[in-house]
Length: 200
Ligand SMILES: Cc1cc2nc3c(=O)[nH]c(=O)nc-3n(C[C@H](O)[C@H](O)[C@H](O)COP(=O)(O)O)c2cc1C
Image (cartoon, rainbow, N blue to C red):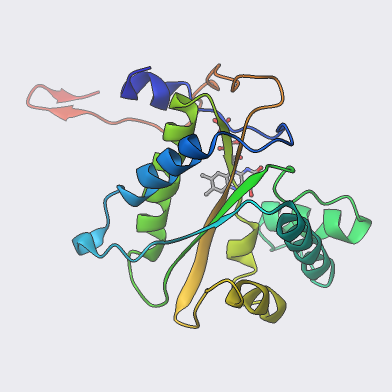
């Protein structure tokens, strides 16, 4: 699959096989993330790769518990509100049971922290697709970045006080075998082209 095809057919996967994918493929996905561009070549994106089912289960439980303690108001961002409400009902799903979860952090106060992290995450999602793996951006830890219990949990794996959690990625073999590759219709993302002849 060439790069453009991998980009144009990438979709989010939300059902995974329990079994871990081939380690070499996971390493390639991480390398794709590490080779993403970064502002001023800062290379401060930190990749935390979790593959231990026990740790992943504890993480999912903790995330659910911490969301359940939060309150969502009318002005709470809709996805965050959905996470909080689902956690309160006990049916919250964190990483869709993927066998690999990659948490992304970057330096606190660094102006390109989110932009660099997004480049890394997108590179990893495209690489996963090219390798017949499924992936999905998981944003919940970003919302819980300042949560004490979450910081303590990840602190034991090396998240330092000067780092902010910018995102996460579920990764694994899609339950159906191959990733879903039918692109969603583009109804938004307008394009304005300005040329010498005018604007279209
Ligand atoms: C910044 C960002 C945050 C996202 N957070 C989540 C998430 O927490 N959980 C989830 O299931 N999908 C998440 N997604 C995936 C989007 O829902 C998905 O990309 C979108 O619906 C389009 O579907 P597609 O990826 O299959 O093309 C996120 C995507 C982005 C770019």
